[in-house]
Image 1 (cartoon, rainbow, N blue to C red):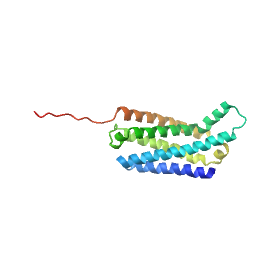
Image 2 (image 1 turned 60 degrees about the vertical axis):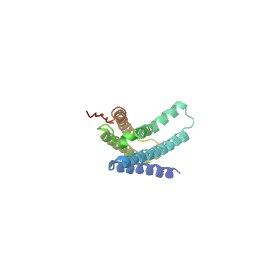
Image 3 (image 1 turned 60 degrees about the horizontal axis):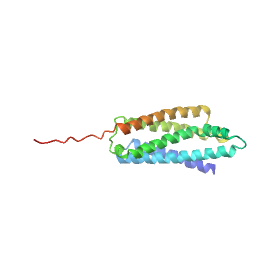
Image 4 (image 1 turned 90 degrees about the horizontal axis):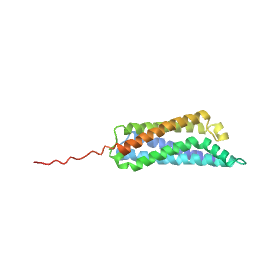
Length: 184
């Protein structure tokens, strides 16, 4: 059963990567649809990974205190929860500011910042995919400390970029204005 889940979350991550690549090379409605599809499939993949990790922690956590279980949960699932939070927030931004994004009524740096966020997420996912199949992860259920720390670092940079993107979408939309001209 674990192998089936592995195939499903890897497929979700690869499908999200393909959707993001499609979004890079298209514009307007197609790009928006690809971003929405990518974020939703990526959310599904991360939720499956978290489900597996929670299951492993609770299955192996016998005769330990609640505080130790919470520490074990945070240490094993922390990077994935951070990634899920970032992806969910980006998904929220895409849906909330749909009209501005489709009509390209966004601040000048929006496209660049959005691309940077996607690339940072892809780097995180590459690190997860390359380390989640390792023998040590299968035994312990944890990512190596160095990889986990690097994912936290990139996740923090991505979260800061998401907050900047939120500010650009909320406060700096370029709706334009219409000047009424009176002919005298």
